[in-house]
Length: 295
Image (cartoon, rainbow, N blue to C red):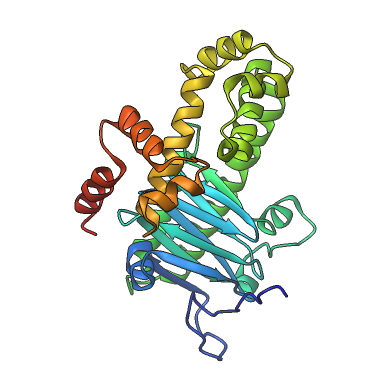
């Protein structure tokens, strides 16, 4: 029997009353620290949420799908969607909770923006046009929310509308670039990365990924070096180390448990692999990282 996803007003709070505000803002550390940096799967039937994450790392969970958080990023969460988050202790940014009925274009409305608002999105704020402006606008929205100056409501509306519309445009521009502007090599590397996400626990060698892509291992290495500067084997190793570091940061599992989760049959071999890649044992790296984050 599937476990029911709880419905909250704001994260773990159940007020049972219709809120008398249309926008709420707080920092992500102030909220997530109360829940030990992990927000369990839940949903908001009446609220639309925007997370602007400027630093740190973590995972965003939408239903059964897990997405890595790579700042700077804007995450949008439509109403009634089951979602949760795991954050590192150095996470930084804001979460905005908006009464969905207040949005100028409600999620699901028969328009391009309405359709975009009806689905969750993680939009990287890279060096593309408008990215810096979106970050600045959301930061200004957070500062304005804390004030009680004249015309506050109008400015909140204006900042919110600008940030949403520009984020939607940036996200759609990224999709168009993916569809039309990428080279065949970039698309092959993306397919390789998707396979790597799916099969890294099985410890496929580079040759297995090459066969799945219909390439020789030499050709795959040539492509990955051209696009990323790394060989296929180096990308595989980085993926394994990245997953290991996430487990060491986000869980209390023992090194032995983590090694088994990541598909290593021998915990001692996992520790040697981690030491070769990072210069530290898993235990030493975990202790150093906890000390750095003040855990």
